[in-house]
Length: 274
Ligand SMILES: Nc1ncnc2c1ncn2[C@@H]1O[C@H](COP(=O)(O)OP(=O)(O)O)[C@@H](O)[C@H]1O
Ligand SMILES: [Mg+2]
Image 1: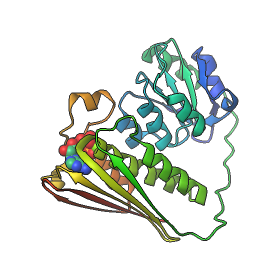
Image 2 (image 1 turned 180 degrees about the horizontal axis):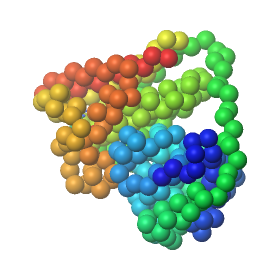
Image 3 (image 1 turned 180 degrees about the vertical axis):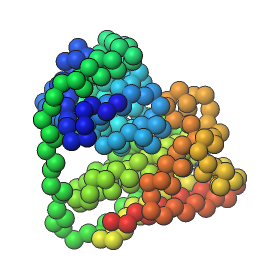
Image 4 (image 1 turned 90 degrees about the vertical axis):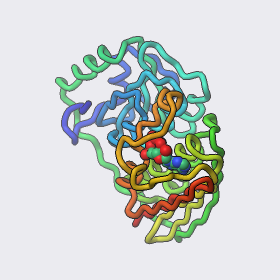
């Protein structure tokens, strides 16, 4: 939900106070400003509809929820009903500058309280100047992803995001690459055996290629349609598997090419113009 106008912003501390939340991680970053609170247990929705500089309000107390928030350029996550993740989320949050809060309230009450913040006035948000590119751009990096390895899921996208950020690309562009890579990475974890990922960067172009060994996609056109999924109940319980991944990659990339051979594997090539 929107908090005030687009130009206005709220500090995370105000969210913490209004929700009577405790801080799990990020005590020093409570003055970070945010523009939106996005409430959802569905990570595919966070990646598809969440906006940068938001806080995620969720009942999903897992590291994947925290990674999803990070990919979407959120600033923090609030877990409802007193939940606290117990799977290394804190370390990930610390390394990536995310605030983690826990409130005893349920989703509805938390939303009502946040809504009440709207009625107060806030100073306009300061808009930072975009990072300068100071070094010659040229990067080639390989990563690998292991199918079914949920404990490391999201690590490749996290590294890709951090590399691009360091180079100094526009945060909006980095976000598009990060979200697309993350959806592709989750697809390998959920639907394939293993994959090699290559990231190549030139001043004009960022290219991510995910080459997997696995079952392949019988009908790529169909798989690209919103809502088409073969995901299991277990995958859905983790906030993925609603058939929004490939459509979201299509939306976020400038060019997408998918080649697949049944029983062999899939190659997902994404291009982003800088
Ligand atoms: N790398 C892959 N290998 C095999 N099948 C895939 C792969 N990526 C996607 N698919 C197939 O395409 C479907 C749609 O993918 P996607 O849009 O990401 O949705 P979801 O992953 O939520 O099911 C998947 O359910 C799966 O059947
Ligand atoms: Mg998917």
